[in-house]
Image 1 (spheres, rainbow, N blue to C red):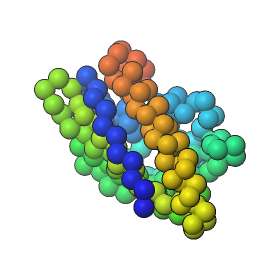
Image 2 (cartoon, rainbow, N blue to C red):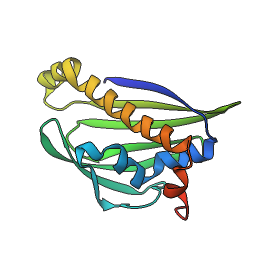
Image 3 (spheres, one colour):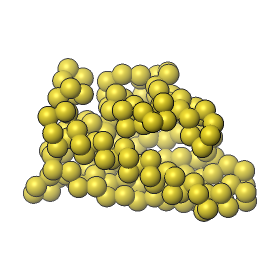
Image 4 (cartoon, rainbow, N blue to C red):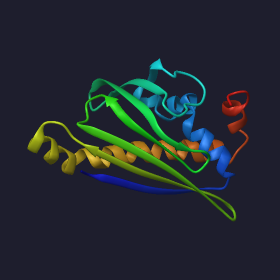
Length: 160
């Protein structure tokens, strides 16, 4: 099963970074170029333990639907979302947060298994891993931008 591991430094408190990472609105902003929308489950605010969100977006030349559930959470240090329905055979995204002297380290560990057997593995190695890593990097760039400026207030005020 392929694994994508990213570490992003963010000059902001751990609680802010943790909450921005759970924000449905900020996720939509980070994936706006894919017209990603939350269409069922938790569609606004901050997603919490055991809640689900169903995303609809255009990826890889096709409209796709992905339902994920928050299966583990330890505020403000980690949470995990796992695919319940979607195109992957399996998908699990661990989000870890570590407070350091001048900010927060945000660590993504993303596991997935492509469908379609050997053909899926070939496509994953050829293209899918790089595509997914780029999506995660885009998301992290938006979280960093909001967390390190006053923009976070527009996302998190009254969303707790």
